[in-house]
Length: 360
Ligand code: DNO
Image (cartoon, rainbow, N blue to C red):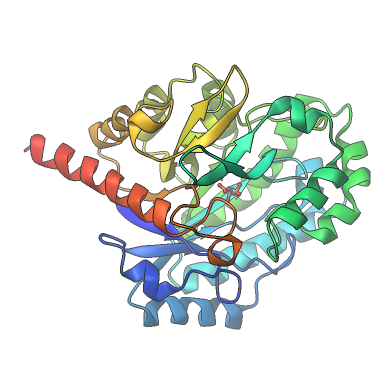
């Protein structure tokens, strides 16, 4: 496996490449061009500049998280073909600059959602929290306003003001949409892009929906083993694969993450892993804990062992962490401070080293 770190990009992330390079075991960053709206082709000179900056810091950049999917594609709306063509142009340009894996998601309208971005824990750290009843009592506008206020100067991916302007139109468009229609639209997209991914040798890695339950009446589809199976079978190919996110899938109580790792990883379909822990407060609510197994409700050792057992060779990144040691919004985007993720990465590397050495 290759250990990586999410970096939101120049002027988008208060954490610098130099700091990331100093984390033991870090091979590279996972990044994006956040300001380019979904549906547009990424300019080649922007990609080149981003890759050059990362390489100059002594790090690799082989994974993009994310190249977002325009709503017209998910909805099967008339504008989809043009957006798919732009997607393929972006894939082509990324491949020319050494990108080997693209993470994306199929969440309708919004990306991930939490009720609290900075929830205080008794030890003085703070973390992201999901409280279903809290969100149920808010409108999307109220939640977006809350994020804007809490996250200070950052635009939350998936909650950009531009997207928010059209939110009611989109909420309406998804209302009553049948699950089968949604899958048919996804298949249309996959049938168009996967042959290019094969040619370019870019591994496409769909990220599960987070949280794994409907919010604001929007359907959530990629939330369980069965849905993932169905999605991957829409266009069977090694290049149509998965970002296995332990925190998204694991937020459904009882989900057997090690079994999913064994099944999909055994088929070589997991290209990228987001590993984080969370602590359940009841059936639906949770907060994001430190990665170390005893701190949360997920068995991170069992998950890493499953990855090791299937001979995982993809990319891993520590996912969300708490804000600790007086980190403030000035020092990291919500969930993406430096210290707890660096600790998390080295916990995962430590488990991996032990697994490797015990198996030889
Ligand atoms: C949250 C992330 C997601 C992820 C996208 C992938 O922190 O895991 O926002 O980047 O869903 O497209």
